[in-house]
Image 1 (cartoon, rainbow, N blue to C red):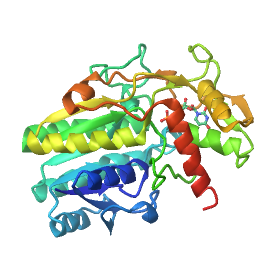
Image 2 (cartoon, rainbow, N blue to C red):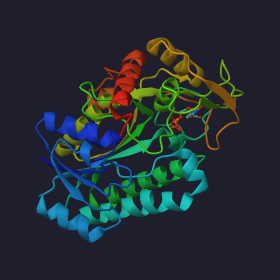
Image 3 (cartoon, rainbow, N blue to C red):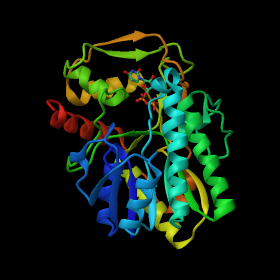
Image 4 (cartoon, protein in one colour):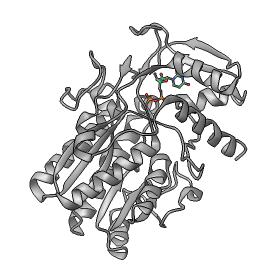
Length: 325
Ligand code: UDP
């Protein structure tokens, strides 16, 4: 099948293009390169474009006879969304609407989207199931929840089938180091811990050690990006067979605190990692851990590469590769 991958030049998008190609699909990356990298488009062709450009999207859909869409193109930094919510509603809400309209007008009726555990907000209990209330506490989470509401309405009104994958924390890199996490600036925890280990930043700042968790730092569920990529391919295959409306969590069910990530990285790299404790970052819930039994059953999927050591070793190797770029 010809699958349009918006944001295919980005982190999870590029791993998904590889997984699509390996499973016999034909990925077509559509990306405006605002945060993605052209050199990560290694599987399938590249089409430059913005998701807000509806006519360009329709042209690309027609040109490549697109059968389904996997939608990654979005802004995804919690802290930035608190300070600049306008960008998040513009890109993630208006951008997704533009894409859904292009699909509707060109009669493409399958879409898999990247959603997020941020839609749950400050949950009281973990692990979190899909039935937990959607109560985002930052504009990033709100923009993704709005996308999910649009999908439900497009399914009802136009029969457009969709799977919204609510990921927890994507981490790690391709096993052959063909792609990996590459943000500029980098704000995510694991790459920043590695950068601090290399002394490429002065220290890792740990945002808050007064959370109600065993060591006071935030707990997250880190899932290997290759496991995420596999789930996207399986979700698309499912829609092609049976066009429905689904929302699925993708995580491992195990949480690690920021302090535990720091300690594990120091051990693996055998380096002292300079760090300090600073105040909490706005918009951060204390703990987010997934219950992903539903995805495991419906997609016949299981995280296979998500043990913490594998994630950290892969991320560290990839960082060495892009360090001087
Ligand atoms: N974090 C931190 N220092 C950093 C970056 C992140 O303490 O330099 C914490 C952050 O507050 C959160 C966790 O690490 O509790 C994961 O943050 P990240 O930005 O990687 O992902 P998010 O959970 O925001 O999607």
